[in-house]
Amino acid sequence: RLVLLRHAAAAPPSADTGDHGRRLTRGGAAAAAAVGRRLGGHVGLVVASGAARTRETGAAVAAAAGAAAAAAAAAAATAAASTTGGGGSGGADGGGPPAPPTAVPPSAAAAAAAAAAAGGPPDAAAVGLVVSDPLYVAMGGEEVLAAVRPLAARWAAAGGVGGVAVVAHTPGVEEAVDVLCRGRDAGGGAAAG
View 1 (cartoon, rainbow, N blue to C red):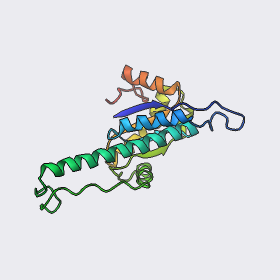
View 2 (view 1 turned 180 degrees about the horizontal axis):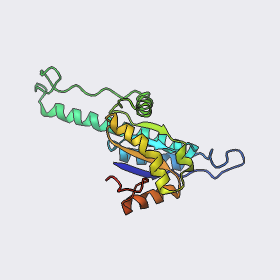
View 3 (view 1 turned 90 degrees about the vertical axis):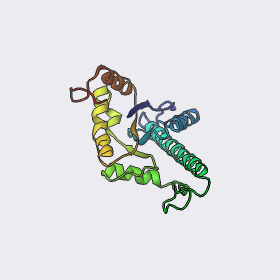
């Protein structure tokens, strides 16, 4: 699964920040977190360009998606425990309900991102964030997909759980959607579904 996102609402550039340093507005940060909550359980890795507004969007999406996924896992464990009547054989030792999942520590998303970037096994309970500087300069759809492809491949090869969300810029995001809808990938071949 691939999710393409444009960064959330950002402040206009200034002499101090330039374009690369533009930060999210308060509303943009809230919107990014709302998108992350909707993506919880559907994405395991967020790839963002190096610009401040995309890094902040990606971090908010990853944190909210990870929290939503952890909450859903806890709810599923609670539901499973209640269906066993307290004495079922769902526990690891076969003598009780499944143990509730432990909370995902704040560093888990950072560990998942480091594992994904290094090609190591990701933590299924955390949503990682990887910053890809080529996404900042990738203005065309095929360039966006080419920048993401190696990261997504490493994520999948390492057993990554969930899809990949890409936070990039206009017009690259829109053009990447166009490329995918036409059935071409950045290598000129048929795009993977």
